[in-house]
Length: 220
Image (cartoon, rainbow, N blue to C red):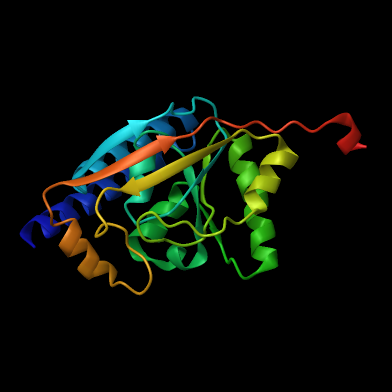
């Protein structure tokens, strides 16, 4: 338990410091902001005790990243390799630390049961891409157990096609069944049990980047 609280202290400290610096550089440099977000991801990956096996090539260009969703650890895990903003459920915007950090890091919050909110989210996603950010989407809409995958939400695929944005699939998998956080599991208990473990192993696979091509016949 001591290790879990020790790590939690540094997670909160690093998050607060990085966001404060982002607030300073945000008006002047998108690239510096992206570097800080990547640093945050690497620091929190270390705080979570994650040891990663990486496969595939991290995309160099900006675009839409589509991944499965296992845990609250997924965001820094990906961010440490590819700086990006996230499409997240609206409830997280009200969370003290996550909501505060997400708002200042250009994250997009969406009410999935609201057509109007989904429309605004797609518009915001296009806006972020045009500003030079990659956007991370957990297309299942929720977290799932080890080796399971729910049907993917198709809205972002349509956005990628319409905007001709590159799309990169990503697979996240933890090597132990205890690590995914899903369903009604208590987040605090899960954190203490698993982040309080000295080492956690995961695999991160970057698939080939896909680029949509709309023929002249389809455009007419």
